[in-house]
Image 1 (cartoon, rainbow, N blue to C red):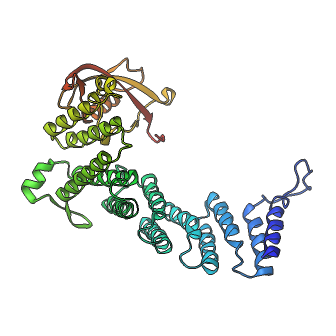
Image 2: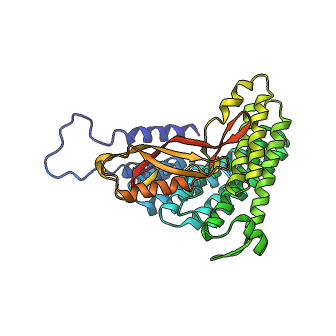
Length: 413
């Protein structure tokens, strides 16, 4: 429809000339502030008047209108605009057209801003249903869709956040399971994308175990399995098996390793890093013997490689926070504003078992209270560290210096 396209072009061009030109003297008397949303509404009225309420080009105008309203904090009208854009797409391209995806993501964002997490979940489930119906449940074209939904959850409800609940961890597990299933069907078990999906599934299961164990703050994983078969009863959840999440995560990581081993493009360094990360997993669950074996296997993987042998001694020469438990910058309530962001040097001993001892803050700035120093040292002591390795063996490192960042409470990390 060339006439409609030309008309929309004229309308969009008109959006930029409806305001007074730069340098033009304003009229005397009161002039109400210009509202950009009115420009979009005028353009929508013109297109609807000439070509009907479902003209194809209206979807972009509703997208722009909704974004303008969203930027101004008018969530209800923004959501209505995005819904209207969705209807235009569905009428013109079918109920399962992927063209409506951007509108739907913005609706999900609005639901989160309104505090309606369940409604946001329903929108994201609809996005997945639409795309799986359009492309096919086993189509590789579904993988970018699943990845985008996964990234949405990582940004809006990241693991470890105080606002993230068990249902959110469950949803991330379901997404990563779908990634594994689609990639296996489309690419095979040894493809890099399949390996990445296995790894994400393992990480999702781990984060779930850590969340559940953190909720009770009392028992170790062995206690759960020995006392109750790994079953927890928590508010809002009928039954949760910690042991099942743990086993499923371990199996996912094993499949990740097998996929990497079978792929000729995997470098020894990549494989060594995967082994060390799994060692961190076991370290966090107080399985120190298993974690040591994995660290040593990571070292041997490099040492036995012609291209990477020189890295073997430097790869784990210094302690570092366990992969799954790297601490976020500390937020201190009483940090003086004039200090701003701080990076403190922390002296500590990291044992061969990954325990942190003898924590001291070096050259603490004036104005940092004893309570704040105590908070910092407590967090460091509670952070499991991957121990250093010398000659292929884990060792204790004394007077290790580590840089720690702190921010005033309320700052973004």
